[in-house]
Length: 111
Image (tube, rainbow, N blue to C red; front, side, top):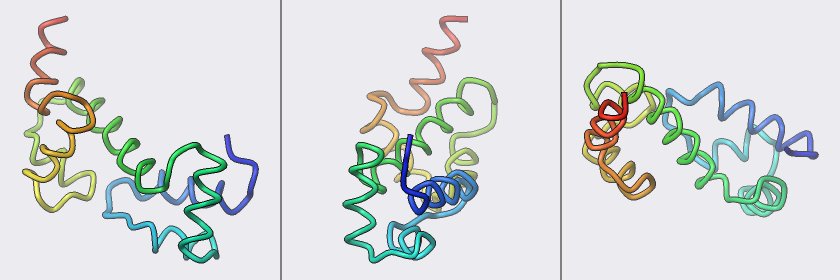
């Protein structure tokens, strides 16, 4: 995936902090880089910006939780570091194409 050790460190940091709010500035500091340089190198190594990657990873975890757990959507949102469940729902719909409830229902319909 990533060749640069700083980006590898940032990826590990992102994966370990998935249940917290994450910012690109904070992740760049962890990688010991300026934010702009970090964004450019991250995109070169991973193929998307850090912000896009963080959202992607959180949406993948949300999909897994919606498919395997029966907890409320708001609990999933909070477990991924989102303080606002309605913002999480809008973000999920924008990236996945369905609301969390629609995704869960469509997954359950396939079972």
